[in-house]
Picture: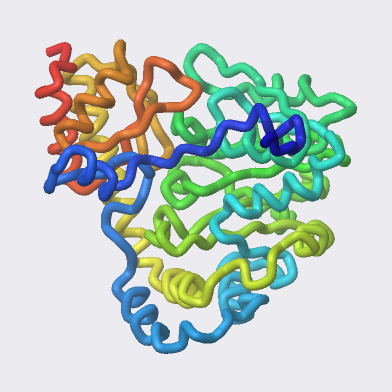
Length: 369
């Protein structure tokens, strides 16, 4: 019996996450597995987070605070913005979904660069909207002037992941300032800063400054900044992220937010994680060390890679799918770089995990030394 559903959903391809460790164990019977596929924090999370979650575990029979009051107040102080300029999501992905449902459901158009986070395309499709992808430059960089030139009467939302997943590229502060300044007032710019903590030391703009109105030369625009506790804070398994925008935009997004969309343990963990900036700094510094190790080892093997502002690196492989499978059979999980046929993406792990990756790479025969 045929089940009818909207035509626009027929083109949607289900999102494929990185292969879980448990799945690879079942498939190949391996015990020692290194997962470098999902850009997770390899150092876990703050010890204070673990203790707080344990303390709160006896109360999981109660519904969470629907408005995330205490987390909202703490984040408001940390970011130096008003509490009513924040919205929380079950990961920042949920807020992307809210944006699609609110601003693209009438068939409006979203713009984003080729090779951007695959969820932008998915959300545009399932929201009933349209999308166009702006070509990258030959070096995988993104020309914001081309983005401005591509804006049409149908354009309602522009998604920019900064840094970009999977290339790791990020636009710098000066060019982003010029871009924001020239975006039409009726267009919403979504700055997805999931990897902001890793990129912050390298001249990448703090998108929330456009909402704080730090630079008087940049007029007020419709900017939504997305961030997450999944990456540098190490809370990927609890799924909690947030968006920051003018309160008028937040009020509109709240209309489609599901009740109790962020669970109680996630709120408690995020609140504690926010307090421990020392752990975040440690994670960022260790990531920098790991990044330099990857650069040196790739160069030593004459393997092309794209310099990154995040906690992952995209590298060239002549037979990417074949190499991906060879690494899997050695218990090393990486990720196909979606949108880039001859590239794989590897997350930066602990020192031991990084060494294991290159040992597996050499064993797979992918070395130009």
